[in-house]
Length: 202
Image (cartoon, rainbow, N blue to C red; front, side, top):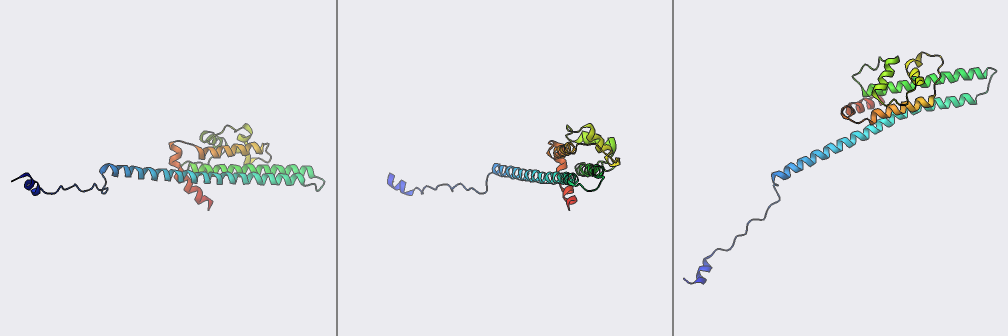
């Protein structure tokens, strides 16, 4: 048998099947799962942060509303010039509006605190205990002796010497510090706090 006959008896070359992209190798499955978990975690965190910012804005808006009510009444008092006892009446009305602002702002602080620390006995706190709680839980760098006295005993006073602008700045700082706080404790509180504030808003 010559070489040509031998070559003719050889079978054609069979090429291997093309490599399929499906199913992927186990490593790709692991990578896909990790990416999915990362996307879900990032989405949830972004959503939580976004909601927390909105809730913070609502709390600060409520505080600002208290301040604007005070400022509007103060302007009305200054512009009123009727009656012979105008000066005395204006002082009395100014004191009344100041006390009203202090109590309304204190109420906003208490509600924010109840949302952030739902398991604490905050509702019953008053006086020095309430001020101590405020010092220990948020930014209190703007807390002066005047503001401390107003937060402790303002609701029991008939007159109160307080810089309303300073108290409003302190309250804004304290509220913002609770929402902006970083760390494990704040992260764990974020979901229930958002739910409770939204429920309170309705």
